[in-house]
Amino acid sequence: MEVITEGVNNLNIAAAAVAVATTDSANNKKNRIQVSNTKKPLFFYVNLAKRYMQQHNEVELSALGMAIATVVTIAEILKNNGLAVEKKIMTSTVDMREETGGRPVPKAKARDMAYGSIDQICTVMRPPQREPSRVVFIEILLGKTEKFDELMAAAAAEEAAAAEEQS
Image (cartoon, rainbow, N blue to C red):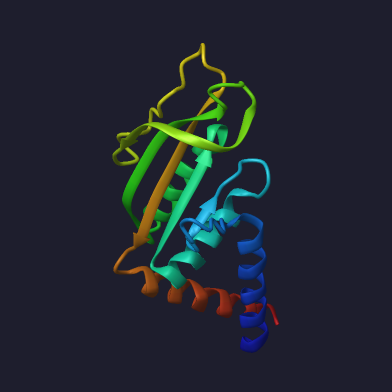
């Protein structure tokens, strides 16, 4: 049973990594999750963040625009459950168009960066109304708490006991 569970977990991690993790060749950040508020459910990202923290000791959550609320919610769930501590938060506005031609650009350029805690950045910067080509961007870096491994082991034991009860 454990071998099957481990195989499924490895498959889920691989599929999730293909689905949402960045393979940014410049940064090679294997612990980054780009969150969308339309593609996957909230707890998909929460569980993926837990797995990334198990593997890399930290996870970087990032989002644009309307998905910012989802990233903040994921971070707060992990913090409130005692699994994560925030290490760094960055917000910025990004240009979504070229400066000369006004055409959309494939990679946004960061501007107006701000650092702080989630509590300080609850009122996320808003792009100026007269510049519709600018979008707000956020990155939250979370690290494991000292009790992370203990809490994850307890949760796994609870799941195993519940599965045993059902069989």
